[in-house]
Image (cartoon, rainbow, N blue to C red; front, side, top):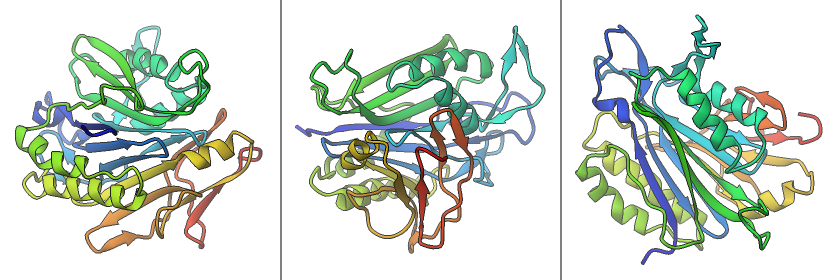
Length: 306
């Protein structure tokens, strides 16, 4: 039995019609996650696809959201959402990742209350006909109400906006049964992914990361809606423990994975590609969209002067 918490999610809108909106774009995104007692890894492919034609689109709207040095979200579904006020939708759409960041900035705490706020908000920002929004969250929780022993626990979280409304759920990565889930993946996806998920090594971040990237590429080899290019976010427990002391921390965007830094990298077929910008960051009530990577290959995050 695999002792790790593992999950996969695949875009629910990939098999749906465009509802007549020409040029509408949604990310057809494969998301993989591995939870261990000392690190968490989140992997997603970068490809966006036009829903009505299935053709690849620009991937600029595909983002991860990293919150307070402890947890992160990736999503699959509409690239943009529309806020509403008193039941009336705003004319201006906002990127889905920005909406996630705004909710996280207004509701501190993982898995609750941010999951509840995302689920409640998803009912407002995603029309009922647009059934494809899934938000996957991973992170470290030390909520005394859910963790009486005060030990950091790796958490896998899900928010799903379906045709009957939105719901949320979360799983403790250290408690059996091991949390595993798939959403609208073809049977051959599951067959291809299983050996790569089972190969995740709780003693090696690098080997685990490469296994998840290889699994994503195995699916991409037979599914043109999934890209071989992968975005990877690794959150070591040691960094989370340090940030609780109010210290600054780095997000490494090149080089090997390390227990001393958060890692956010773009894996192309030829290796790690340097990145100019990092994930959307939430630091307290502040939001940083497209933070620049410095010449040293990392983003330095200040918790006191964001």
